[in-house]
Length: 148
Image (cartoon, rainbow, N blue to C red; front, side):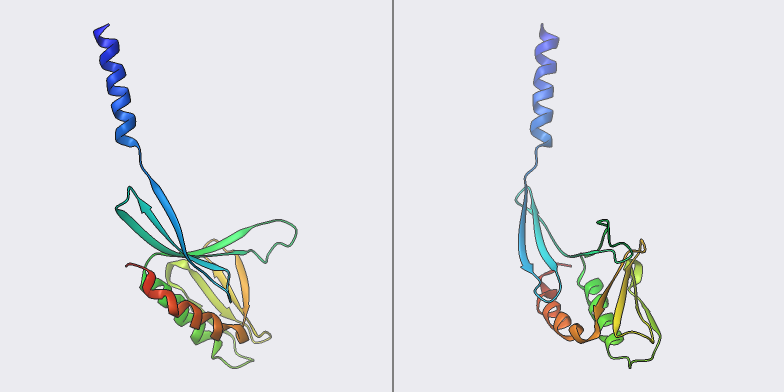
């Protein structure tokens, strides 16, 4: 009987020790690009802020296949934004490819005014060069919300 009570007490204690709270707060929702910046608070003390942009993989039109970029560090998001700026300034008729670190690539083809953005798994989408200025301006307003 003693062993049963002791084991039940240990089990209930282990459930209490592993309980966590997690709160998710959407801080920003993009208007020019469908991104979000979200804050996750775990156990009321640990805080993480990240930028997330999900997109339909343009390789497929009949199935849903979502690609995404997620940045936790300001430097990584700045690399993404600076890449958009740099590639959007290229003239039409130029082939240009740019690495976004470990996250993927951006590419401009001589036949298009669209920027092809490919994430590390090969899923890609396009953004019109005309829209880049508005997208960059919007993201730059919020880069400092990221903690690291």
